[in-house]
Amino acid sequence: MATPHRLEEIVEAFGQAPASLRLPMLLEYSEKLPELPDHLKEHRDVMEQVHECQTPFFFAAEVDDDQRVTLHFDAPREAPTTRSFAGVLSEGLNHHRVEEIVATPDDFYLRMGLSEVISPLRLRGMSAILWRLKRNLKGYLENREAV
Image (cartoon, rainbow, N blue to C red; front, side, top):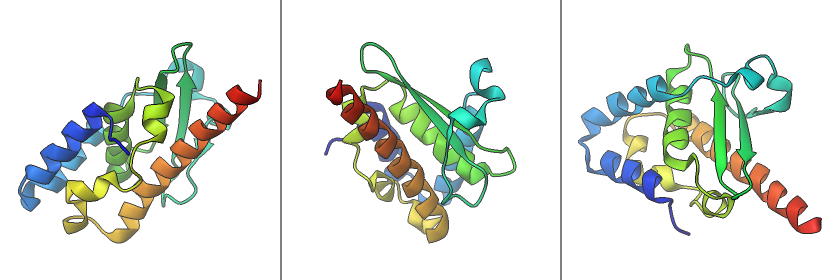
């Protein structure tokens, strides 16, 4: 499986950074996470919740006619690590094709060296976000093929 180009750049930057810089680098992504668009701000009911996260976390994946995905994440500011994971995924996967996101390695984040700076429980949260996102997009592909 290939990691989409922009996400690979992020992975490499983390992997090359000293362990002491990885957590600050990660937390910068919490500030980069875009706000929800107006059509989702008050409509979490149309977003998927990632129940495995310790904090309320929601996402939506919108697919355009060219099969490119726009990702939207909703995580509270009081949960900077979770927001940071969402920020990494937003920056690394946004506007890629459905198939590229589905092909993203499930454990790409291990190459970021995050296991040295955050707990395994938090890493499972990152894994759960990606797993649910990919499951959502696989469902989209199956429904499209059934039509």
